[in-house]
Amino acid sequence: TCRAHCSAVGANSELNIQARFRTAEQAMMGLGSLVFNSEFAPTAEQWARQVSLEERYLNKGTIGLGYIQRVQRTKFSALERRMRSAGYPGFKVEPGGENGIGYVVSHIAPLDLNAPALGLDIARGETRRTAAEAAMRHGTFELSKKIELIHGADTVPGFLLFRPVYRSVREPETVEAREADLVGWVYASIRIDGLLAGVGALMGDQIDFEVYQGEAVDPQFLLFDQDQHTLLPGTAASR
Image (tube, rainbow, N blue to C red):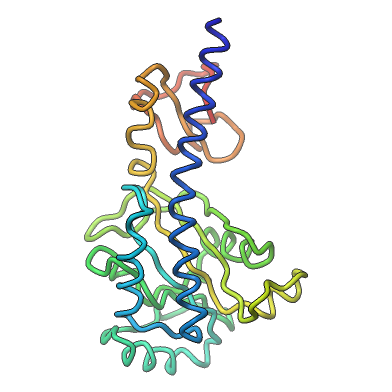
């Protein structure tokens, strides 16, 4: 029936989108191993090399892979010296902020398109910090809400995917232990249009779909519209 066919096409689209996220997750797992095996201090060269090895997993949606360190504010100067010695000669932590602990982007690649992200303290803003702390507490991959990503000289709509890195070989079992054991996060910058490009074509252009942030079908939470037409009130959509 038409209903069964449409349901099958929609389900296949959802599976395809989930598979695209998994490519970023696989790359992040490899980078997490690098962080751990380098005693939580990879050089810029090591980071760039590992990202190049992980590129086979990536689709056009993933535009950057980085590492964020949790650092006491009193140790920002020491972090700057350490990162300059590690291969980021102009490294400087973003000034300002009142939190006693910063979440500082210390590594990023490809560097040519993502260099302005180096030194950003994501603890200063709510959206990135909330997702990172959820990943820390749950020990899982966590996706931020929609933000503007740095991409060369421009910004593009997207989100960050976080994976926590703990000091222990085995993941801590409680929330309190995870918070105490956290070293930082590996993260992926994912642009929405790149992530979802071509999904409709893979389904033979049999469906038009929209992607929303959260459960509500509300234009203010629209992340992606395949045919670029604003949804009319009362129109059904895929989420």
